[in-house]
Image (tube, one colour):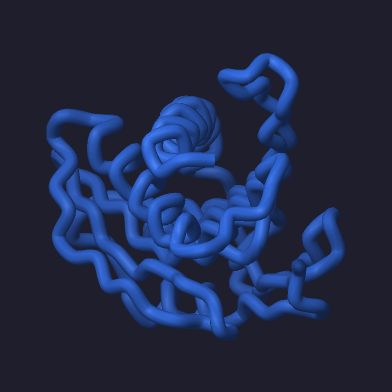
Length: 189
């Protein structure tokens, strides 16, 4: 896959995901939550993460431009008080991205989030290495909301761990608790 195609896939994938996410977010934003965090295991079996309330799971498969390949993803969403909505997204591409294309995939994802809404502004994005693979820590603000996340690319899998909510209500400590609860049971690829 070339970089342009990867970026295009990332942008379309994210645009569709965010549309569904925003619809779901609006319906659960004021759902009842508890104070104890729940460890969930991803359906794919390679990782777990703790959510502040019971997450809802959405699965989707999207055809890619070639008409043959498919992109599948699982999204786990859970509200937390009035602080925001927590999200774990695991996307599975038809082929592994390697040789520097992982970074292009992460950049495409970030670009898709930023350009999803004309009010969005990238506050920061830091490329790091996690488990020997490229990852991106970022914060995006738009209008009266924020989207704080970390995306990690391993082989043909993209992991997005994020929190979205209203500006002024972002709790970095709660986000870090969520982020640090993510762990691999077995590293994919």
